[in-house]
Length: 424
Ligand SMILES: [Zn+2]
Image (cartoon, rainbow, N blue to C red; front, top):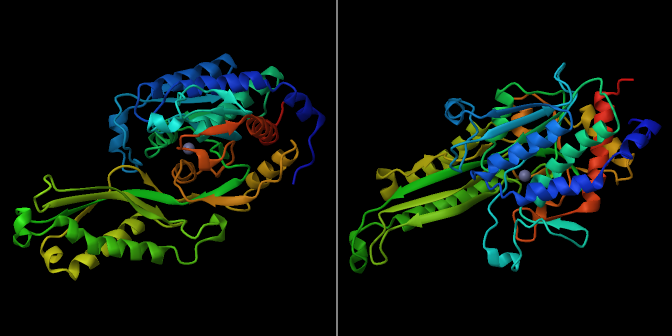
């Protein structure tokens, strides 16, 4: 553990401009950067501008989407995009950054406006000590905190021995193409903190999630003579049952880090069948998400689901002759983790405690994130620590507490000073 806060750290923290932090966050939230929208480009330009204004060396590039999709490691995507922009700011480009702070700027759609009780989901209204709106928690607060670290160091006149990097990415919510593009462009660091909302915890591991599609055929007939046909809906039922069994098997004895009995959920989110109410449906398509276990190769997970569907088909006369087809469109998140005894873990704990925060506990998240790309193809030890409560993310009451945002930003400033070192 490192020593308590030094005089230098205390002096630097006096330069944290909380008004600028909240203003940055409000500007980011007011830009409705739903995955695949034009605002996804706009919000990236905004981040590039803030970084430039704070003296960072900024790499802002147009992501070549077609080239990226050809890459055998492409993580998948679901939104349609004509354009995408990558943004990385470093305090100096003379060496590999000692620390990278990463945040995604894309958000999920706001959903039914009614559920926001008449409020504009992109208003960024501040009320009761919290800033409200889509993306406020997941994760523009974290992204604003990352920008504020650069701002604070600059205001304090600090020159770091090793650079600090800030990665602003898009496309996290639908697979991670922004993180992938950033790593493929060669941006690296010795360690990374993704400032996803963790409610004061340090998330050292994330489960993965794969989007699957199962297509089941039937034989159409008039509904009044349904026995002349074969319902694709009914043919799907035994498949659904084996999927439930598969989920149960894969969640026996989960890692206690999760604090959940179902860290690897298999959920069918979209089902469509038939095209006419009084016809026997001749086709069913089911799409869902399938959890990937810690340290499991996603190829192994895919095989497990394909085998389960094949097993269900082998015992059913119709399905044996009319094999369901399993494909893997959309987001493909592997699981990922940082070594529990990597020094970054203790350094984050010490930085939080030394800035007045409660010692964070360690945990794991059940959802996939950019962590697995940074830890995987990036080879960068990476964890999550950031402001906000994931339980309000993606919902109609999304918000972030401003006190928490400030606290996390202070911890990140101290972490950056300690990891990157100060040049005198
Ligand atoms: Zn997120």
